[in-house]
Image (cartoon, rainbow, N blue to C red; front, top):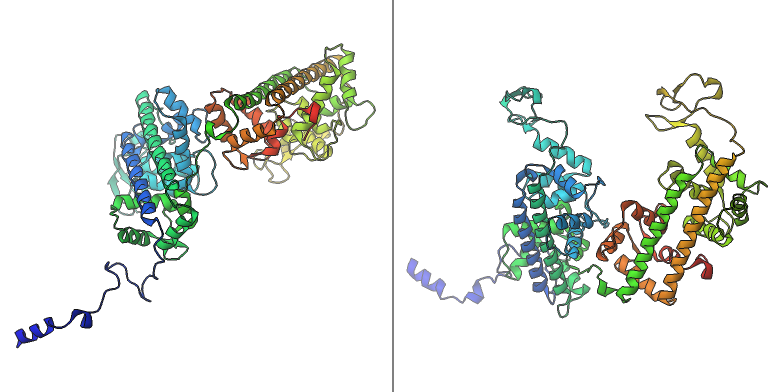
Length: 614
């Protein structure tokens, strides 16, 4: 009977009685209880997914290169390696710092590839590009993705927190009973037995604490190994950029294709997860390993988030080339001429800053100002400066003094300043050194009254060591230096005594020193104007060249940053000290701004005597 029934069942038509499976993959179903149906397959979906797989392959090579450093960032530690890349203690690492390391060991690494490392770090970090790598970013480059240190770098919200977590990981051990981190004092280095301060469980701890994360400096071998790792990361970053370029040059590829691919992977939702990504690879019959999937998820999902958004997906696959010399339509000769003019401007500004050291010492600004303004107009004219230089027979022309007034007003950009009228704020910028506290106090001032108040606070008060509020002693209490902060009630010694009037009148020696500073500033302004006129004659009054140079610096954006300026100087092999670079940036960037727009850029390069300030 069983055999007959079996034959009868086998004889039935399979199309009439056996249900047809809608999806051959058991992990993918179309129905109301499962994921929604996928949109139509995009035109080059498989090409996009294959590009993602190549990204995972390059990331895998970078992970393999991290084995050169060794566990825990090698014997010297992460802090020592970061100091190798940041010898000046800026707190961050630039692409020029990576270039310095590779030049030190004569490694054949193009500078564009080092720039690509910073770009890749910014892509994986997400958010607004900053142009540099923080302590956490460098830690992610050095520590393997599977290490606890890498996870600590991803979870930390600041560099200080990252350093603290690294210290705990390297110089403490978890209690086997409660997990509380314990370390031994250096005095008890010979006895490994400790008692947990939380659960009182005894165990053996072989980690001895030290005061901070900073340890012995990196050896020559550590620096060479770090250079090899940087070279490997640069090669991987170059290949990632080349893959994006190949994808962008693919026939039929555009922004719409990326959007369609994202909608296909996410099934129309605003984000997709690892299950959606795995299913997309299955649909296109692309094999993917678990390690590659983890690397892809780390790249596309910031800090291992729950989903990948369209913005993160697009940024990882969009080709955004860095600027090159060929991208500038101006000739290399004109491009170099513009950048060299900017370098000479910084050198001239440095010479004017050095001359400020010859100025009168201990004289209040208002006393110097009133000596040049005997009629109390409230502002200075070029004639007032001319009278001063004539009193001491200085070899300074009247035209250079007029140019000096225009130059200072060009840099300050005060809305309330009238052309040709020198305010107290502009006079303070002319007198005080660039790195002085008086200079920084005058920069944000919006009026002369505000400037006078700020200078009075600096000269006749001291900050509270606890809360920072400025405190001064009364004139009657000049014999007792002890004061109490009116805000936090902290007692401290204050040697400043308040006064209600400014010192009036200057000695002949002080006026002569002031004349030296004015003459040096006028000479510097004349040199700056001559440089602008020479550049204008070279360019032939063609504003297109300046526009091309600006696009070259800004990489096609609306503004450029300080790292962009560093990168341009390095590409053109122009050396500039850190002080001169800061002076150049102070000239071009408006106060409080981290970027330079085209208007601020061009106004510093066009002649004043022909067109005047823009």
